Length: 342
Image 1: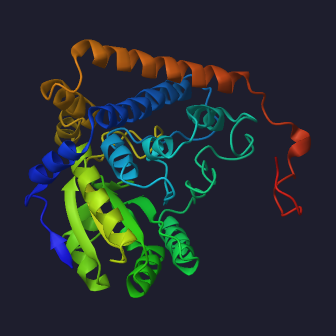
Image 2 (image 1 turned 90 degrees about the vertical axis):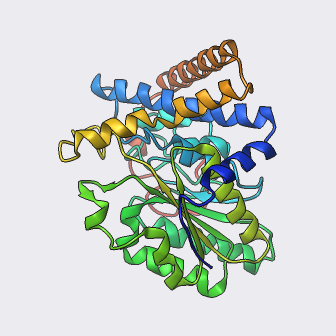
Image 3 (image 1 turned 45 degrees about the vertical axis):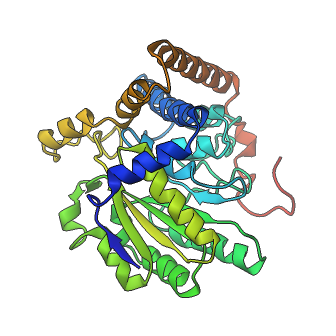
């Protein structure tokens, strides 16, 4: 146990991950990263047009973390995702149309258009329900992992969250439970440097990964803008958890290049940090890697982008064709009514 430094073996691990993945798997990762980026860009445009119900949060710059981490999970594993993890939900099987229906407040969304647009989860056995309070998804995922152990299932649970979560009691409770019981849990922290407007130096003291030694769990820090580095760390953690090695913590270092939400202009963030984050764009970086490695040609990259854009168009159109909720349903689904809501 202990923390691995980000500089030690990061590029080697990423190269090793690339060697284990077939060209089709690499192209699949690129597709999901593109889908997250293009879908979120579309939703931001809809927000400024006044079409979005509620606030608008994105994971711009988090694509490598969401897609890389979720791609390491097995077909029966589960994840508790948050508002910057669209790519992870897509990897785990969520239809993109649900994303647009949720933001547009339509009946076709998982919540039937009846509440804030962030709560998109509970989508079958792999995507756990989105909790609004940041940090609360860690004990939710730990509880899922405990359930897997009690039932004798070789499944792994994952929780994705921001570095500000480490200052919450819920994180401590979930992480401590998982460590003591050696639960099959993978904690993926997107350290994007700011918890709303609070810089990481004002959130926690010392390196994040090194703090996990106190919990008795394996921890490492990786470049969160490198999807292959994230995948390599997540795959090692998932394999460790499945073989009874207990929980792991992965710090994915990135930069939040937009505001906390689109209502936040991020004026408190030094421009140099934002500009550096944009230069390290994970989508463009992975695209360049695929071209240089000969995995994709320039023509295939363009075709992938066109296909992803068409998928975004189709998902938006489907959502817009779905009606808004009927006011008569206002009180439905608030309390348990004895049967699931279709």
